[in-house]
Image 1 (cartoon, one colour):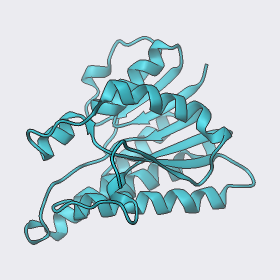
Image 2 (cartoon, one colour; image 1 turned 90 degrees about the vertical axis):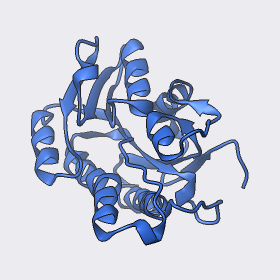
Image 3 (tube, helix red, strand yellow; image 1 turned 180 degrees about the vertical axis):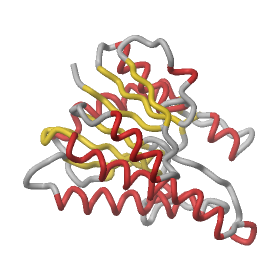
Length: 222
C-alpha cells in the first residue's frame, strides 16, 4: 500500500479520489481548507491548509515531516468565469496564489519527503494546453493552468536523474460543484467519482511510462 497526498480533498475530484484510495487500503493524507467532511474515515488523515498562504503551507509540512510520500496529487484549484474587462489584479493574484504559487510552494517544501521512485501529478486543464479550444471568461483560470504545465515539464527535467517523476493531466470538463458554480446549467460528460478511478490509477502507475508529459484527458476535440 502507498502513501498518497491529495490537495483539494474536501470536495469534487480530490474528495472522490481520497475516498477511493482510502477504501483500497492506501494511506491517504488529505489536504483541504475545510476538513470537516474528511474526519473519521479509515486510512485517511486530514489536515487543514490554505494554499494561498505560505505560512499555512509551512505549518502543514512541519506536521508531515516524518511521512514518506509515494504520490502527490496537486489537485486543488480555483475556477473563475470572468471576462477580462471584469477582472482585476486582486482576482488574478487570488487565482494564481492557489493554482500556481501554492502548488509550487507545497511541492517544493515536500520534495525531501517524496520517494525518489514517487510520482507528482499536477492537475491542469485543456484550457491550459497550447492550441486547444479556448473559451471567453477563462483567461485567468486557463493561463494559470498553462503555467502548471510548464512547471511540470521543468521539474521533470530537474529531477530526471534522481526522481521523483512529474506529469500533468489536462482535464476536460468534469462535473463538480466548482464547475457548476462557474457554468450554471452545463452538464459535463464525466463525474468526479468516475474520474477518480482514472486519476488514482495514473498516480500509482503513470510514472512507469511518462515523465514531464501532459496527458490530455478529454473526450472532446480539438
